Length: 158
Image (cartoon, rainbow, N blue to C red; front, side):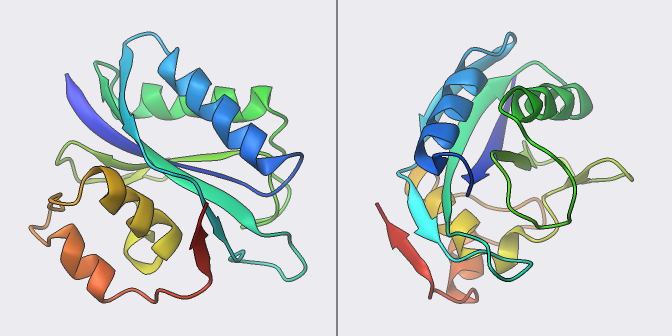
């Protein structure tokens, strides 16, 4: 079993309901057990202008799924909740990203681990710290160091 951390985000079609349903769907995945989840946060959008704010959070799971099958299961959940991939970093009903998969480092066209932009995103790091404050990245940087170097504005804990 491997512990993986997954970011959840939504800014369309009742975002709080979307992330809550996404969390429930993750909890019901076969070969996965939900261990913990963060509080929800409201954050300013990253990407194209004119988007509504996002609701974000992070969950921890224990899984026997390998990274790519886990990614495909998460994409299936996104699709079931109406995710349309029309614009990079555009508004979406649900976004599920694998942040970390144990201490695995992976760089393929389909999946990069750790998530390549997580260190720049307070809407990922703050909720991650809520459930794994002592976490150390695969490159041995502590989560606290990433948080200290990340801008803290534009986010509110709900």
